[in-house]
Amino acid sequence: MKLNSIKHIFVGLLLSFVVVSCNNDDDMMMDDDMMVVRPDFSGTFAQVDHMGRPGINTVLGADGDAKDAHNISIPANQGAAFQMAYQERLEALHDAYAIALGLTAEDVDYEPNILSGILGFDVTAEILTSVLATDVLEVAPDAQTVYFDGSVPVGFTGRKLQDDVIDISLILLFGGRDGARFNGEGGLPQLVTDGVGLTADNITTTFPYIGSPE
Image (cartoon, rainbow, N blue to C red; front, side):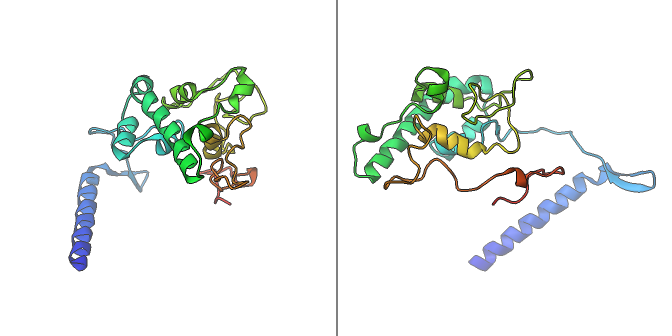
């Protein structure tokens, strides 16, 4: 049975290569005595992801269908369509950690995050998920480019290559008021970092501009 499955997969891949090569035959042409491939932008293209806020849909999407629905939706519609589900998911994750620690849900509820001290008001679960549900990358052309580093009273005005977007997102979701609420100490789970370092040493001047993770 396993051998037959492997054969079917191999045949399927082979057929796909044949189809691709046939479709692209007309795109091959001579240019200054060199064979080049011209990009073919004909046909119908499907949106499959946004990636304005990497990892948010992965953490807060309830299941595969919900994640797919978010990925193909129009950003203008995402807040109304997904905010409540994201908030419920965020609060449910805190409840799950409470149970794992032998505590009640009220003991480990979502805590307004580190942005609260910078903005001067509590960033509640509703406020945070209202922002995160819309999967776009804000850019402020006339302001300092900062995703979020905790040192200036601005954030999400762009993104630099050295910004550790996943860690920042986890801190905002699980870090509480000081950004270190679930930091792996005192028997608590480690939820404020993915453990993958990113430093200036990883940045290069050639594509893809980021080296191997540390």
